[in-house]
Length: 80
Image 1: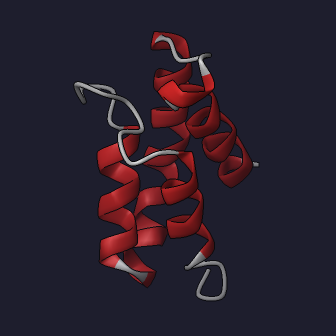
Image 2: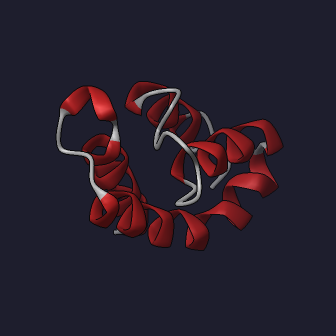
């Protein structure tokens, strides 16, 4: 559920989708914080991309886009 929750809010927080707001990025950040240690254990670059995009203090939430976040997460499925 945590992974799905993070991806859900990454999608919603992506400015391209027009749903973005403080609630969406805050919820996504909460899910991401719980997953980042596991993602980092598999791939530090994937974790950095997720952290950068889901950071509530970022000037632009999900700046690299939902697809980039999703691909980074999917790249570590086998390891997790």
